[in-house]
Amino acid sequence: MLRQPLIACLLGVSLSAVVVAAAAAEVPSEPHIAIIGRSRVAVKPDQALIQLQITQETQDTNSAKQQIDRRVSRYLIFLKQQGIQSSQIDASRLWSQRIEKPETKVTVAGHKKQQIEKPKAKAAVTERKKPGYYRLSRQLTITVQSLGLVEPLLTEALRCGLQELQSIQFGVADENQYRQQARKLAIQDAIQQAEQIAQQFSSRRGTIYSIRYRSSEPSAYFASRSVAFAATANSDQAQSYLPPILYFTDQVEATFRLQF
Image 1 (spheres, rainbow, N blue to C red):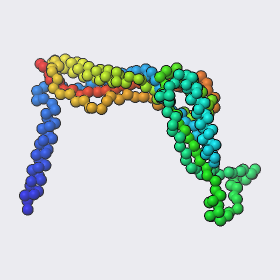
Image 2 (cartoon, rainbow, N blue to C red; image 1 turned 60 degrees about the vertical axis):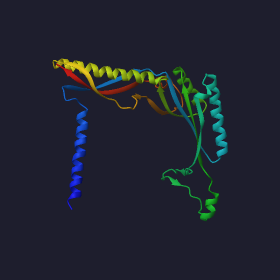
Image 3 (cartoon, helix red, strand yellow; image 1 turned 90 degrees about the horizontal axis):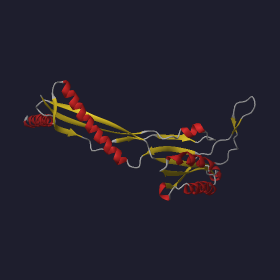
Image 4 (cartoon, one colour; image 1 turned 135 degrees about the vertical axis):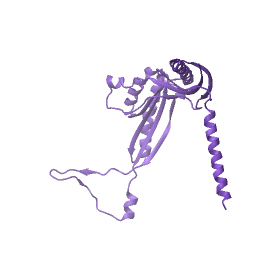
């Protein structure tokens, strides 16, 4: 009766021994130092991703779609004039949503707001006569490779009736270059830390024993802004679209032997 619990207990002990042995194998038995090297590379962006949206609420979906398409077409002509290629534009996203029709209210002087109610009819008849009310939206995504065009594109979007600016995301065309640079600096940081700390303890950094580096790519922090267009544009608003600084970060864990 006790053989099965005893086997389970022994199995648990052996598994624990394996875990401890594996953890011990990560560091040498001789004197050593474990270091985490970190880096951050600041980069000025050279491109931007702009997301615009136009929305209209109506009962006549066909008429609303035609109005939206005309505004978008006008804006696409402007983009072409600015040298924006078709491959840099995604204007294919169009969707509709049925919504509840807003209630009409009136205010009488000296009285609280009252809702105008029509005489109630039969439920089945009322349901058939209730008109549909829809919200149509179309989204545009533009990749801008010249940051000097960002402010003019936003200004023209306002003039064309594209009243919603969903976001502006700044980036760089060659991300891999800065990711490799961040990785290299993280390795250098680990080596320098190991040498400085070892020297303070009257020793020297020896050969590398182990390196722990996650396979995930270094992180790049992009600034994203989501605002609504105001009725007019001014210089202060134009300044708010200036690109921020991007930071590519990385880290590496290294264990070095110590020499005395």
